[in-house]
Length: 229
Image: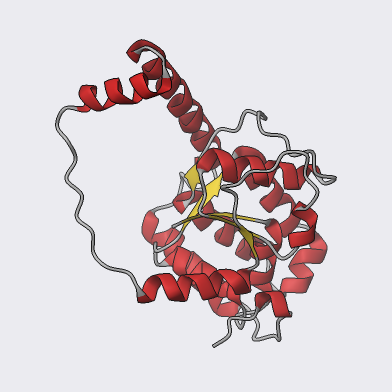
């Protein structure tokens, strides 16, 4: 399952281990949930979480926040955004999140502030916006119904591309050019975010993340972050 996460979800995950936000990152750590990332959104994560006030609120160190962000940069799925989908919300950071959710085709955009995403000029029918608490309910139902699915990848990839191109009313070359351009953009975006972790091993990244999450305080959480269990 792929999620686009508002910064407030990351913030709350470092505030209390009792909440749904913390639970989400337990699933991220277990590689059961993927996080969609873009360069602007990751930069916003870093800017907010590394503020002096944020670090004081967490009762953690700046190094701890770096370790937390490092795992996100390592496991996150990177996407290039082109500012083509502008819902024109009052907060530009919310616009960035909506665009990332659309470009990545995220299953959900998770946020504490549902009202911030209302009254957009562009409405996306496939955009599901929910709170961490609501997501945990969905997650539990999904996991209860989960089953193993084996997928056989067709050998004739060219045939598949031809079918998609025909459905879109474009040539194979046009579709291939679009796909290459999109993937190169995603790779370039990924390279910028990957700089956050490239000097560390996978084992160190996960170990550091576990260390940080063990330091998160056992505080009470607001209703939007309650797990329900």
